[in-house]
Length: 274
Image (cartoon, rainbow, N blue to C red; front, side):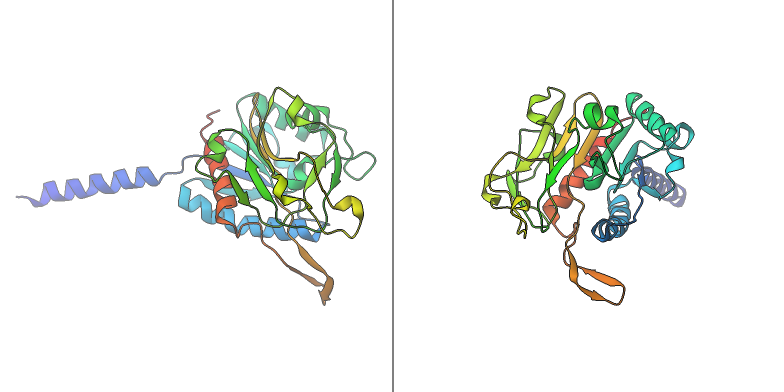
């Protein structure tokens, strides 16, 4: 007589468990994965680590290197868009992304996705993205060689929840920007380089070593659901080639605190409902 209730309860528990495991949100990562070996190394690593994180935190993770997928119909399936290494170049792709963000979409970009420099192969020819959305304007300079830095949390935000006030990052090439983000009321700086990091970089050129200054590395724009993360450039053994291969000397996702920052950002962004 008790078998039916037991079976019913077991089925109910299984259904509830399955519902709990259902994806909370869907992420699509765009990438190019060409030219810079450090960025290629990072993208390959990201596309290994992020699917594992997706299973653990119950979101779906898809990837595409076809930037023509940056259109309204394709983006409608996703709550969060990632730019792993570059940005869209075609006008129709840029318009689709801008509309997506202005209509409740969420975005996280890494390292080179914010790069723009005129003249270069990636000129500053997208004012909305670089000046309004990111607020940073053009790239101004960088440290070299990729090194770890002490990062300081600026204020309280869900992205930095339960992180230590100061922590050591993975090695990275750190960017300096044309515009002072502290003067932009729309920008909330979440992390910056702590002064204990200086001198930062090893050169050999003098301007590649920073000795002082304020350098934001993670921020959000209050008008959009977005997070930019400057990390995403692995250190590479350029001096020693093994055939056609160049070994990675560092990994971006081998740092539990930095990884938690990225997870916090994804979970915060994923709460957005279009």
